Image (cartoon, rainbow, N blue to C red; front, top):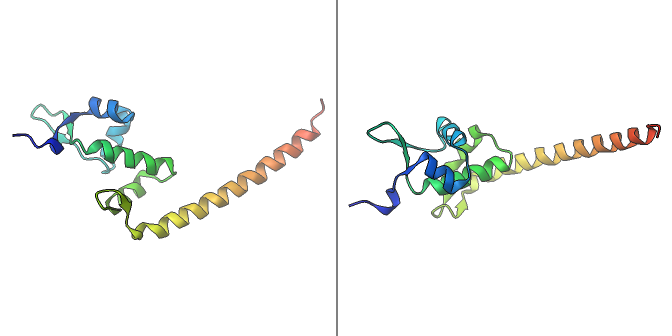
Amino acid sequence: MTDPDRVALSIGELSERTGASVRALRHYEQHGVLTAHRSAAGHRRFAADAVETVRRIRMFLDAGLSLAVVAQIMPCFVDDGARLDACIAGYLSEHMGALRQRIDQLDEQRGTIERLQELVLA
């Protein structure tokens, strides 16, 4: 009898369900943030919960975190993935600070470009 939580998805099916490209899924696997099992024929097979794992990976990547960092923080999900453990709070605060600093730098650059545009002869 097959456990419904262990239903094996092909890489194509996982790609279709998550919107992540096959190439991205292979990349996630290479970095240890996504686990695949091999069929007897050597094909990648993913558990049904891989859909949620990919969603989490993409959320972290969308936040600007690297896959190396994602690999470190993926185990921080608690309560069946509903929340993140407090151990990640410090890193997220540091990342937010770095983002704010970068935004400030970009705002300054935009202001400089706007002033330069005013000098352009029409």
